[in-house]
Length: 356
Figure 1 (tube, rainbow, N blue to C red):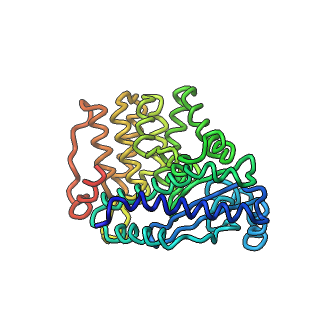
Figure 2 (figure 1 turned 90 degrees about the horizontal axis):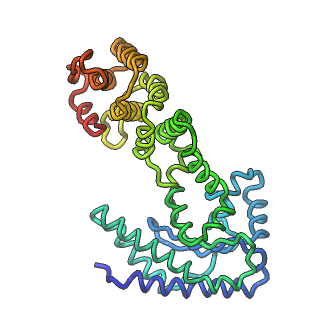
Figure 3 (figure 1 turned 180 degrees about the vertical axis):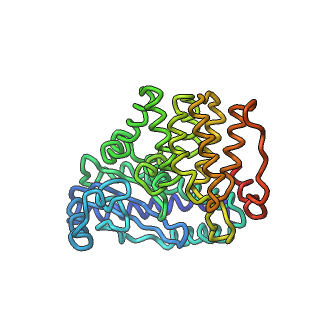
């Protein structure tokens, strides 16, 4: 069992290592136009990197490694400019004491028996890194820093959302917004959505739901995750708008319900609902929650249910769920409907339970 003082000791040792790196760099000839200091830890494979970058150093890296890099590959939260492993100066010494303490942490992470234990230690490690950077404020003032200098901690392999959260912990908001205008601009865009008419708000949130569900690698989807917006929270924003969102939800449902409803899970080798099927189920859930669905919209649901019932090549849960939706919206016109025999049994039924 790892002793409780490890993270406190690690903070002390890393602070000393970082101060030594800053002193070494500050007395050298490259201490000009410094725009970033970073502390990056690889929690999976072990290891820690202390990095300092300058405008001149960045240009050398771009010329030697990325001569064809485009501006959007250089700038931004995930750009070359802010990747510690690409910093011109990132080979500062890490003491044996720090390495030993990190090895203790990595051993615990690799041997953790529960996800809760892993998460607890990862969070403790991240907190230690962030504390070190915050405690370096006075030391970093000795550098010839640019007006948009940033100091941050990060972990190797983080997605954008987690990386942004760690960086915001040490970078003042005014500086963060100037250095990463694509993020601050997106946040302003989200705020402005609240002032739009209901139909326009619905259009924004329905598109956001689709991006998150079906295009998880897009820039907008990354922005949503950076702001801790989940698919569930986005769908709930649609529901809160009410009946103005119904036609837009049906547009999406008509576009994706005919796509393959099952995919094979690589891990279990069983069929699971496809992303489009999952989003279709969520859209139907939103329509149930809104309830104020007019007759033309109900007719669209009925037409879609009829089309799926006659598509023998793409059978799955959606036909039945659309019938249930019709009953929910117009119980006097459409009788309740249970699962269609033979449509969702065995692994399929188990998968649909997970969706529901």
